[in-house]
Image (tube, rainbow over all chains, first blue to last red; front, side, top):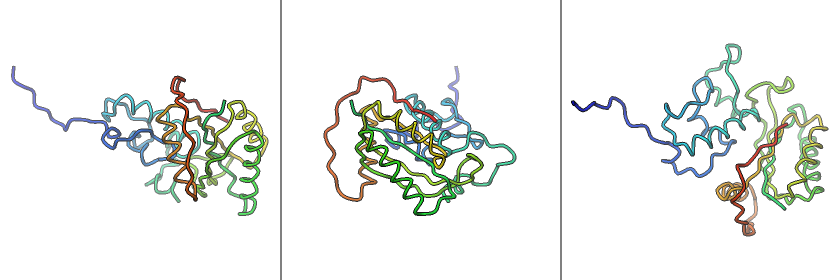
Length: 89
Length: 134
């Protein structure tokens, strides 16, 4: 059998690489990595996040949503170019 | 039994500076009345909300870090629910070793003066932390 060539770079856990021990829900920059552009939680199979950090980031995202730090959904009315930049101001 | 907690609150954006301070002091009093030892206060300032809350677009964010007996949290939250100026709040429990380490780090970051923390209890057996939501 001919060896299959890998087309993409291998996925890895970005939180492990940064040696993050605890993901704080107030730190929206960290959460952003695990969110799609429509603010859905990205699955592990697409981001390559390890199980431990995925669970942590899920909990943090849900907390951040509850406290209005990040939106639950983005619909056509509330869509903006750079939501995170605006949230800071 | 005391545990480490953090309490995030969002105040109405319509309040002026003195009113904000008054409200923060009011919350502090409630906490202390219920036996909490406040370690730090983080002011996140007025920022835009990700979605409308009670028709407000902005809100003043603040976080209290404290140690308190476990049964005092309900009473504090009951008081917060009565007040109309707190449009959102959330209490988070820090229980596992990792979480407590993070809590200590946060407290250190937001205390103006150098302060030595007491040794932490190795209470690692409990289940995952829980949030009490409004």
